[in-house]
Structure formats: C-alpha cells, structure tokens
Image 1 (tube, rainbow, N blue to C red):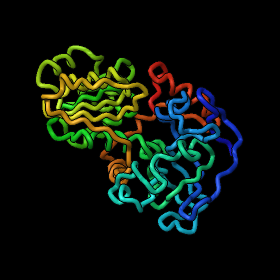
Image 2: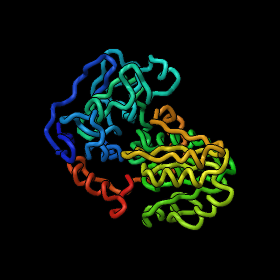
Image 3: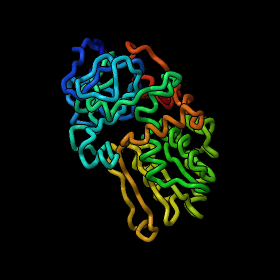
Image 4: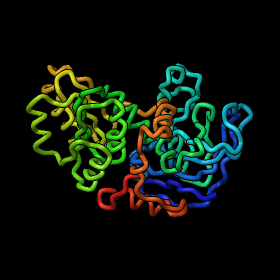
Length: 336
C-alpha cells in the first residue's frame, strides 16, 4: 500500500509500505476512504513528540470500509462503512469502563499514528474494534463523518463539556483554528448568551462569524472590557499558545471555568498571584471520543451543521501537498 511515513523531525514521505494485517483477534483492517490532518500531526512532524518513532505511518482520523476482522470482533462486520475513532479503547480497564477512553490502561488510548501505524494510508489496522470503530450511516457524507473521528469530540468533550457551558453563559474561545471553530459550533447545543471568538487571523475570524460566533475579533477592546468588567463564564483555550492561556486567565470571571484544549509545545505561565482569589476552575484533557454516538445523532438529525469546517480536499496521493496547505492555514484559509 501507499502511506505517509514519518522519518524524523521535519521528514515525511509518501512511500510504499507493508499492508497491515490482523495482529490481534480484536483488530479490524479498514480501507481508508477519507482521512484528515490534525494539528498534533504537525507537532509530530516537527519532532515535538519523541515517542513517535521513525517509520511510523501518521494520522489518527479516518472513515472507510472494513476489509478484514479478527475472530473476537462482534459488533463490526466485513463491508461495514465505519468511522475510526482517534482514540482506541480496550473496553476492560477501569478508565474504559468509566468512558474515559483517552486514559486507557489496557493498550489503548491515543495510539494510532503515535505508537502504532495510523490512518494516512490506503489501509489501517484498528485495534479494539468493538470499542473504537462506529458504523457510518449511509446518508452521512464523508466530510461530516471524518470530523466525528476526533475534531468534534475534542471540541465538545475537552472544551464545551469540561468548561461547563450552560444556558445564558458568555463563552470566549481563544483560537479560531479548526478546534476553536468546532467549539463555536458545538457550544450552541447549550444555548449560551453569546460566543466570542478571538484570533489574530482575519480569515479565521470571518470563519468564526460564519459558523455562529456572535462576535469575532482580534484581542482588543471587547476582551479588555470583559477582563476589566464582569468576565466570561467560560473561556476555552484552543490555540496551544502560552500567551493565549494567559489571556484566558485574564478574561475569566470569578467562579468561572477555563477549559484548555490546545496542545502546548512550550511552558505556559500560571499567574496564581492574580488567580488565587477568583475561585477559577482550570481543566485540561485528552479527547475520549465517548461522545461520538451523541454527536453522530446530532449531525445526522440536522441539529449540528459541521460540513463548512472542511475547506480543502485532496486525493490521498497528495498528502504532502495537503500538509503544506494545512501548515499555513492562516494564509491558505485551510481549516480541515
């Protein structure tokens, strides 16, 4: 098969690679019909995740058809069209029994494109298929389905749900990249009073406005007014930048929530000298994808509209071109 292979910091190539095969009775093999690039993939390519070894096929989000199954796979059959979750769940450990699949201690968690070969390939082996693969309804478009592999659950679980967004809240989303924009979309489920998107890119602010943000602006007067005044009930950090995190701590109200989604490659300063009296809750986390069935229902019923998050489409063999466009998203307008 052909696949995007990581060779070390700054080095990837579209190579011929051995076809995946069943290695465990709980595995399935999926032919990849659609995959996508995540900001984490860029961190890997830059060499910021040393656990990813040279020779690894990248990618952890996919939609495709099941081509082979292990003998202990009971919920998925040959020929099923499926969504491959970015997180694999053994289904047996205490974390999995609690639905916290991202912390799986039975060999799962985020392993695709990290500890085992991933989805940016013609075929992928998916471990723990009964808990890590979900059937795709026939009417669900590929563009919508692939967003359910990671992007939408990440925004919803780590941002909206961890931030305790509720009716009437003022929500500030710092970072209007793909995850931040997915937060804008999924936060609407809980009827906040207003959603304010903050970014330094005019094109991404325009996208935030199209996707339902009540205000979309550069860090400026409105944010300063919130910081000096009542503050925001929920602030969601979706940029992965230390300065963005500091901004979140300035904007949140006393008793409010900060939900950090962004992956920080550098240390972020926690100004406890300014926060210790504010009774602020700060949450971090890795996506579990336990919310995928609920989000799938919302998308298929027309309650959640997400297709506008997909801005560019490439043939699989143009994966390296896709990386180039995605890595310069503020200039190219690329989201997913």
